[in-house]
Length: 410
Ligand SMILES: *[C@@H]1O[C@H](CO)[C@@H](O)[C@H](O)[C@H]1NC(C)=O
Ligand SMILES: *[C@@H]1O[C@H](CO)[C@@H](O)[C@H](O)[C@H]1NC(C)=O
Ligand SMILES: *[C@@H]1O[C@H](CO)[C@@H](O)[C@H](O)[C@H]1NC(C)=O
Ligand SMILES: *[C@@H]1O[C@H](CO)[C@@H](O)[C@H](O)[C@H]1NC(C)=O
Image (cartoon, rainbow, N blue to C red; front, side):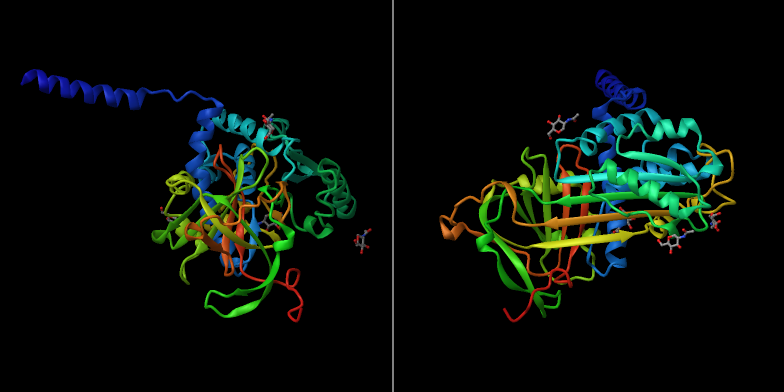
């Protein structure tokens, strides 16, 4: 008996010692693992807010914002630092953040990936003198530039910034910085993100037909160019989240997928507040629970561009002090008083038939097993890097807008 008791206490003691004393080594693997949960929760929060702000039709890169906040964090101290750590879930130890930058350099600064581009800028008034250590720290991210510009001459400064970003992105991002941006500010951040679908298996353009797209209430909203394909895909039906989910592999290496989230019933909850109840690992587990099925996929061909200024969202998430000149503790950026004036993001997505491999000729063999996935009413989407589980892009499509709307008579 005593032995059993002793053994039990010993095991407990050993377990506690392991948890308390366990050193999680600071390496790429752990930096990535420890980021999965926080980046997902951050993403759901901002996407939910973006959905509300943009009437259910937008694209946004939660990863770009999350990283930009990590940049501000490197120059923050005191409660400004505490607020950012709390809202973003970034690791308090800088070693992990540096490892994370290295992981992301492979993801965002990798020339061999052509489906997406993500670049960031920080512009500070040159009179404030950006600290060298700050610049060195944040530009460990290959896709970030820090510019000290003359805010008294906004035209010339906007031109300088635009030339740089255009050159760095081979012309993908043009004329993104405006003269007006320099009014009443010292410190601006920009994120530019662009995605163009490149399916592992393309859609056949001959099967793209005009079809009716419905509102959440079932009312026809207009016509969309509906792309159609039949293939083997992972799909899941999750009534607890009110969603049907489909995975469309979106690059030649099968590392990036587009997840499509199709609500099962009209609901006042946003897709993202429902997804907030799970995790990215949870989503992939449900998808992989069963073997891929033969799915008849219908997905509109669409383009969305969204400019956003997430300041207010950041504020609502508790990151308040950085925006106030009198309260911001950003001494790591400049020795002068400074506040974050404006955080801007431009995101664009283009979904077309094109892909790496030609459309397969699977003709829905065994019609009885054929699953329909018809995105003909508002749906959410997310472009996910499967290894890191980071959401590169996400948004909502809620029907034909001017750019997508087709002549309804033909
Ligand atoms: C760049 O991407 C390719 C293909 O996705 C991958 O094989 C390679 O390891 C990446 N390079 C770096 C430096 O991460
Ligand atoms: C700055 O550019 C705007 C238009 O881009 C122009 O209207 C304005 O006159 C320019 N200002 C100066 C000082 O050059
Ligand atoms: C997500 O869940 C957390 C609690 O786990 C909650 O505080 C937050 O408000 C939720 N956000 C959304 C957008 O549903
Ligand atoms: C932030 O700084 C700008 C530029 O000095 C200033 O105009 C603005 O009022 C400041 N915001 C707050 C809330 O202090």
